[in-house]
Image 1: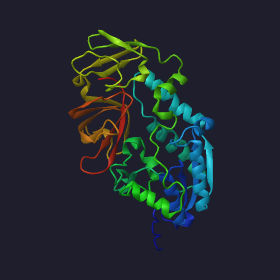
Image 2: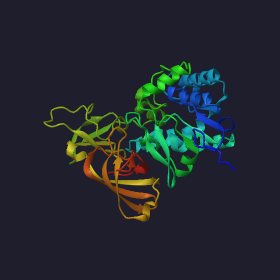
Image 3: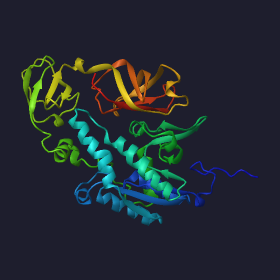
Image 4: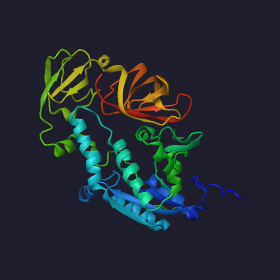
Length: 378
């Protein structure tokens, strides 16, 4: 019996016999993925998630899953001739992402809701919906690569380091990775993606990239949190590391660890930074930059993507990112059991904050080895 050759998605089927659900945000990236697969002859089904109040969405430009974006995704599907569905995930999104976002800020953490959305909505509920539709796989417009290794599917950084989204996808499990596809990860630039959009005649070819969190208009986190949690913006004291009151603030939710500007404190010889937030006492604690530095980072909810179990050895030498905008740096990972670990950085990092992610990378290549959530202060 002759082996059936693999198609471009790595499946032993002809494209016409391969159903692919494409998660379509209405932006250029996911639109190009859908159009590309449709042109290759795949049985494409486009799905867009309505994640929050449609009326509010229509008033906000430049955020994913807003009313305009739903319209744009539908137009792409019409242009390329494949079915498109809008699913109401508003309740799921509120419970799984928005409520935790508000609570995390109120606890003094700095959350990353886009990771939780991928983890709890797109790669969980939407992926389950794709399977219910008898799809062979689900494709997204993320800039990350899926490669086959000796142990199965591996997650690798995008070819274009400027677009790489590995920090936001570290919690993707091995089981999910078996089913997911990322057709844009190998492209060398966003210009290539836009050129493909022009080639397919898509009206979103020149659509700007979304910069904000989709449910946070104009990046104003505090306004959203205050609406969700009335009274959360109560004022309090700004104190130094010795507890001396230096001034007053307009609510802990307006500040993040590492912040320097907007403290409203003058007359000091040296710059000061937010080094800790204490929501219980409503204090913003400030200090010199060196007070921000830390080498030990406690983690929980570890997702491990290595070929060997994480507890197969007591120490792992790898690279880590503690913020999405910073390059990976050398560290030692020490598993502690029950999904917890500690990372020791070779060089101290400033502004490490609870609620952020710490992502693990193979120091000798592009592979993502998983990550965890930073969960308590230094």
